[in-house]
Image (tube, rainbow, N blue to C red):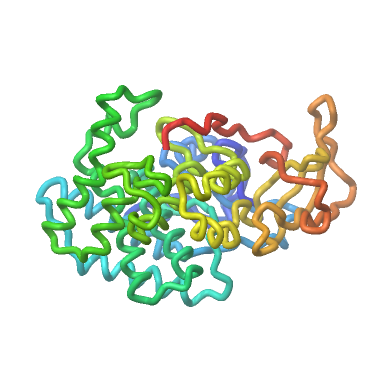
Length: 372
Ligand SMILES: [Fe+2]
């Protein structure tokens, strides 16, 4: 199977996994050729990537970070929680604890625990997808940082709740296309404090509260709300800061497209010791899979292929099954026989972009300063 952006789907493509809605109903089953109207619907529902069957790539297996059921539970809980706190300001700590335990048990039961930047297979709006992925990725990073079970639970809960303050901020500001005015920016910057007062009211632990309140503090003191620096920032907030930015940059938002994963990775590395804690970035950089198996990529030598397997610890250098070559005039020449390139052994070749199977280059946001 291959992993493809929804906008690159074509009529007749066949999903390798079903997609489900927030009620757990199958919206589009696996194994059925897609019609144009269904593809448009997938896009409207906020899916970025799906897995499709592709002849010649039957041997490519998906790396699954978490089951679809658990994804569903996270999305459902975020929707419920947001709706409720908006109306009543109530947030049940037991419910969040239960979710954290479910997620952690599942991740901990896996062998090689790495962050896979993959999309959810459940419909979700941008914010809930962001919360779900931040929770999953932060949990994986915490495991690799050697955290105790108790610390992991606090981290998972805080990561899930970090943007809960947005429940009280108008969607028209949150999802505004283009630049925010200074006044709008000030409103956005209220969200950590808004979250903190809700967490205090509902008797969350001080570590969850600190991690949420400080997730926009930056290692060099340039963050908000307090402008804390280095170790003054609570450790779990330093973890969520890295994941929050990384997740947001690799995801399409209502107001801008995702950036190319390779560039996001380089960006996070470049901010080690500046915006982010270098010790955390170091572990993060070795435990992240930015090109999940099935991703179609174009290489610097103009070959096009599909990521077949991962060299763990070297996220930019997977093994790629090459099937075509991009010619100088932009046309795509399909090879008679596929071959594999192990980028760990071919150091002069790098991944420079993503394509679909027809060789169409996938368009990413280029402006790193676009709002994150
Ligand atoms: Fe935030």
